[in-house]
Length: 482
Ligand code: SF4
Figure 1 (cartoon, rainbow, N blue to C red):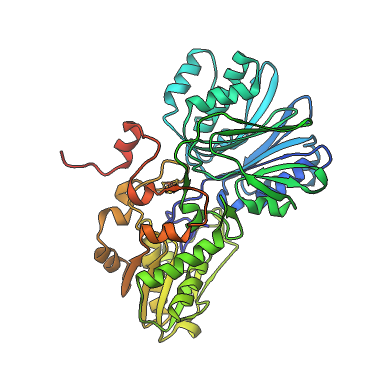
Figure 2 (tube, rainbow, N blue to C red; figure 1 turned 90 degrees about the vertical axis):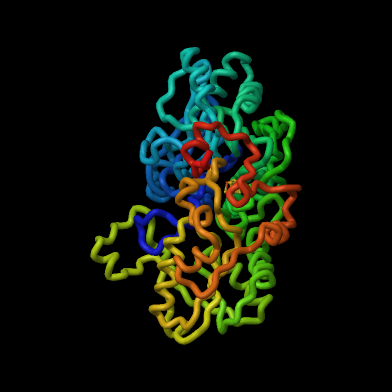
C-alpha cells in the first residue's frame, strides 16, 4: 500500500499500477468471482473498478470510481450474468485520474459485437497509433493508453475478421508494459507484453468448472482456483466453450519482470513468475543485514511491506524483531483531510509508534523504498518523539533515482531524493543516524527464484528496456548541462 503518514499528502512510494482479473466458467457466477478476485487485488489500485460480462450475445460493463466494495453489491452483480467476465481496479498512470471514462474495462464495438479490455501497465508512445486510428474514423473518449489498445484491437479485428488476429496485430504495434484481459461475448483472452514486465497468471477452477487469469496468484487463491502457470511474455491465451488455446503472438524479448513487484507492489502471499513475494522480502532483509549491519537493540518494519524484510534482517543479524509501528488499516485515499493546523500539531493518522516498546532503544527500521524522502523524515521524527535513542534506516530496494514509465506512477526525476542527493545528504535530510540501501546485486539474489533471466530495474539503474520517446524523457528527466 502507498504509505504516507497523513492521508492526502503527496505519496512517498511509487504508486501501485492496476490489477486485472478474468474468468471463463459456464457453471459459476463469473461476476461474483471477479468481484472477489478484484478485492484480493485491490492493493494495486483504489481509484476505480469495473467488471464486464459476456453473455453469449453481448458484453455489459459496470464500472465506477471508488473501491470494489463501494461499487458492487448483490443487485449489480445479479445484473451481470454470463459465462465470461473481466475485471479491473485502477490506479491512474495515464489519463485523467478521476474521469469515469478512464475507469476500465474499456469497451470497443467490432461490427456490432462488443468487447471489453482491462489493462495493467503503461504503453509508451501511443500518440502515433491514436492519430493513425483517428484518421481512419476511430473515436476516442478516455485519453488513456489502454483505450488506444482497445480501439486498435477493435479496428484490426474488423479488418481481419478474427479477434485473435486483431489482438496480435495490436501487440505488434503497441510498446511498453501490458498484462491485458479481454472479454468477448463468448471468450476470455489474456495476453502479456514480450518482456513480461507486468505479471499475469493462469489458474483453473476445480472440477473442470473453468479458468481464471489474475495479476497475482492471491487473486486465484481467493476464488479457489489452482495455479497452472504464468502467461508467457508475448503469448495470447484464448478460453471459450471448446477449451483453451494459445498463440505465441510475439517473439519473447529478454524477460524483464518488474523487480519492484517483489519489493513493494505485490501482496506477500502471491507468487510471481515462480518466486514467492514473502520469501523474496525476507531474503532482502537477510542480505541487507549482511551488506549494511547496524549496532541496535531492536529491528522493526514499516507496515506492511517493510515487515518481512525486518524479520529477515533480525534473523540474519540476531537482533530482536519487534512490532514498534502500528498502521491504521482503515484510512484510504478518500479519507477526510486533516487541516493544516492538525498537520502542524503532528496528527498521526496512518502510522503510530509504540513508545512502550521503542523508548530508549537503538532501532533498525526496515522500509521498502524511499521516493521523495518526506515520509521517511516524518517517520524518523515520530520515532524520536516516541523516545527512540537511535534510528538506523535500512531500505530493501536500491535508491530509486529514475522514474518508471511501465505502469507505476513515480514523480519526475527531480523529485526523487536519490536522484538529487548523496547518501549522506539523504541521511541528514531524513534525520536518521545511518541510512543504507540493499545493493542491486543483493536484490537480484533475493528474487533469484523467479523464472526471469533478468529483471526490469530501470527505476534503480536508468536502463529502460522499452525505448522512451523524447517527449516523455524531456519532461521526466533532470536536464543535463550541454
Ligand atoms: S521501472 Fe521500476 S517500477 Fe517500473 S517496471 Fe521497471 S522495476 Fe518496475
